[in-house]
Length: 335
Image 1: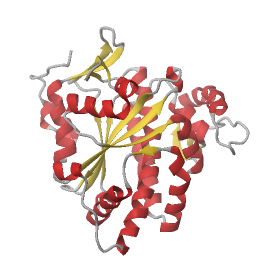
Image 2 (image 1 turned 60 degrees about the horizontal axis):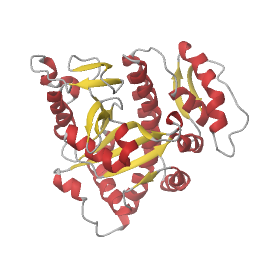
Image 3 (image 1 turned 90 degrees about the vertical axis):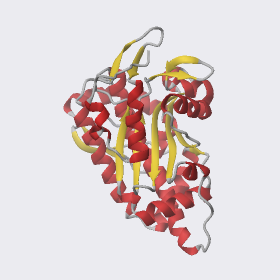
Image 4 (image 1 turned 120 degrees about the horizontal axis):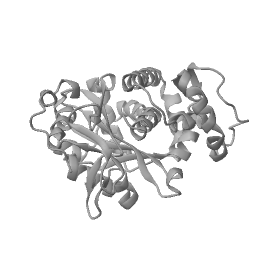
């Protein structure tokens, strides 16, 4: 697996973690509020159109790597599935080779550069057939501040990661704008530990070889730990956290829409049934990674494998169990 994809996965650990911490307190707050209301507003048009499926695009952007030109470094489709009472988090690899409407062929993350979330919505719909209308966005500068406000994030630092993290911490510390960041601190040991804002961002910027299974295992461990903590929060603590984090992210989701989704998520138990997926499905014969034309390093994916993405989001079929992936006779890469 390439260095680019490994870096994407490391960033994804932190991005998903933070976005969950941003959105779930909002859901908690409005869900509790909803018990005092006698009348709920109608569902979003998207929920009705997809028969109980609501998709929200979670975006992590980073301008520093592109000299101020922001691209979507991490893209995750968060799905509230009322048909199967679950919440799904589907990561879209930023280096996926796609057709960007009005621009041409290129990497998926370039769509945000050319037209922000609106063009990214159109690109995802054109290439993957997933309609999106709502988003939550956070950039890496604000991400450091969010992590500080959350009193850090817990990750497992491996032996081969320690020196790499410490080499990147000075640059992250220098760019950190958090008022109470204190004196710069390097990591002194390996193992499971809590990282502050600039340490966590340094961790996400590592480029090295690693085992994908181990990365996914650490991600699941962190996510489930965070979700357990959040679900035990009181209304007052959730509201306080919401007030702290609100300056650091942007969204076009209204309070009434959050209220509706929250009531559904809690009443059906979907909040307790969280699943994860990734597209394209790397390390599979239906995906090929490498340098292609003028696009640089990209993921070329089997056009027919988009059905696996749809089956996961709309029909609750786990990607690893999808029958299509067991057949390699109809592969058609998106050259």
